[in-house]
Image 1 (spheres, helix red, strand yellow):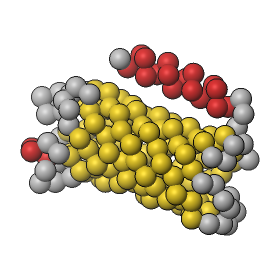
Image 2 (image 1 turned 60 degrees about the vertical axis):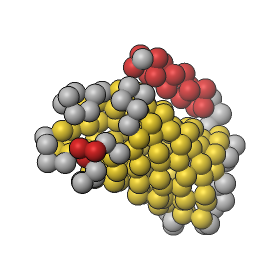
Image 3 (image 1 turned 180 degrees about the vertical axis):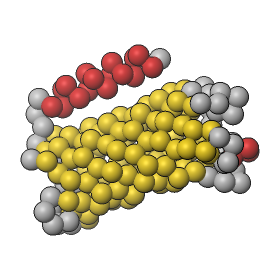
Length: 164
C-alpha cells in the first residue's frame, strides 16, 4: 500500500509541475487529537514542513511531512507523509478559505499502541496573505486510518513563503 501512495504522489507532482503558477514552502506546528481510548486523556503536538504547488490559482497539490515525539508519555513517536489536493479561493491580500482531500501514511515506532498504516481524510482551512510573499494559515483535518479505523482530528498552524 505504501508503494502505491508514493507512486501516486510522484505522478501527481509531475502533472501539477507542468502547469504551476506558484510554489509555496511552509513550516507547520499542530495538535493531534486521537479517538483511541488509550490516548483520549492527552493529545499530541507535532511539527512539520510542506510544499504546495498551485494551478490556475484555484487548484493545488500539497506534499507534507509531520513528526510527533513521546505521544502520551508512552515513548510513542509517529511520522506522517501525506498529499493534499486543495481547492482554494486565491485572492491577494485577503483571507482565502480552502478545502482539501488528504491521503498519506503514518509510521509508528510502537505497533502494539498504534500500527503503521495508510489514512485518508478531509479538511478546511483559511489562509491570509502577508507582505513580501509570506502567508499564514490555520486548518483542521479529520483523518481515518485504514488499518485500525481510528479517527484523528488535526489542527495545524503554519507560515509559508511563496516562491515565484
